[in-house]
Length: 124
Image 1 (spheres, helix red, strand yellow):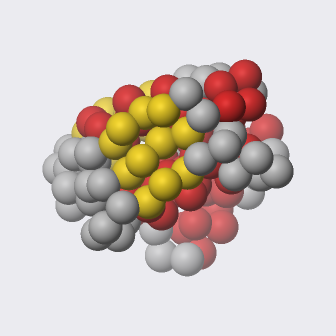
Image 2 (cartoon, rainbow, N blue to C red):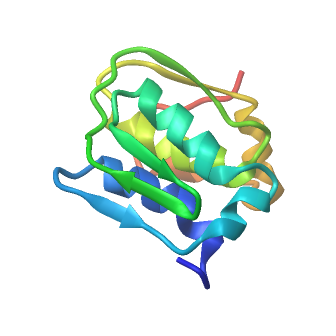
């Protein structure tokens, strides 16, 4: 992951959508982006029932999204907000992502594009 630290949030969600073990390693710089993306994604995916071991330079994901209704934090980080929206689509319940409008920093049409794909998504 060293050359693509910005992919860590969405790849951690993908790892959480499949059975087995996913290792995202060699990415310590993900801790010094807009947020500590390793810590933030570990916390939020655990709220969704995912088993994760947080490492200094990444994470090991062993579980699968199993949540019902859940409230998650974006930490004001556009990549975390978008990744959690993908995780929310796999959830069996309602997923609320606080400060999700921050996704507009890099993807202003994120919500509208996801609606066109069939997502039941809205900003409050």
